[in-house]
Amino acid sequence: MALQLDHLVVAAATLDEGVAWCEATLGITPGPGGRHALMGTHNRVFALDGAVFPRAYFEIIAIDRDAPAPGRARWFGLDDADLQASIARQPRLVHWVARCLDIEQAASTWSALGLQAGRVLAASRPTPTGELRWRIGVRDDGRLSLGGALPTLIEWGEEHPTDRLPDSGVELQSLQLQQPQPADLAAALSTLGAPAGVQCVDGPAAIVAVLNTPRGRVRLNSRVA
Image (tube, rainbow, N blue to C red):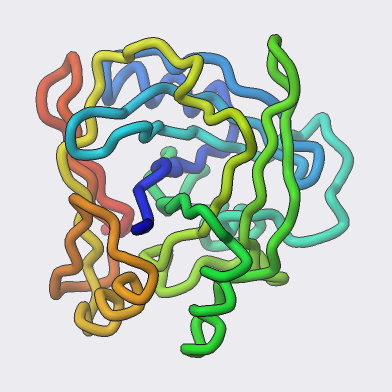
């Protein structure tokens, strides 16, 4: 089975700033998320799923300053000094995550191509109805591959976040992965079955998401001007 777009990742300096940005930019208040003990982070989430991207969702994530340091680099490049300086000004789209059925096989396939899918880690967070569990590829240095255009791989347990998320009024319409050599990225994705609705296009390295929202059509670009 091909990869599927699982979720978009917006990084914020604090969750409060992420919520305020979401309300001002997308016109909704994100739903509750939880704490990630493995990484010392926490999040807020809401559903994005529609005909093009079923079971997709949106994650706003920040370092949890009340949690112990994780003793390793956090995921999604959150420890990177340049990223921290950027999101201190404003939260921004930084990455996307693709789900698969067999993360070990998928990571091995990419590793054989010289792509850094990362070490497969078991992660979880508590929810009111029990523990949400998944396995995820994270590089030891925490950095994002190809400027965030190569997705993080994830394999979910019995439950997926969208199983309990209400309709948000926001729907992801398209996701473009801009790269100076888009054919190389497209080839890498095709080895695992390229996700439907995701386009690789020529341009400066960036992720561009277009969403229908209560505030109309919104375009998010990971590239900092």
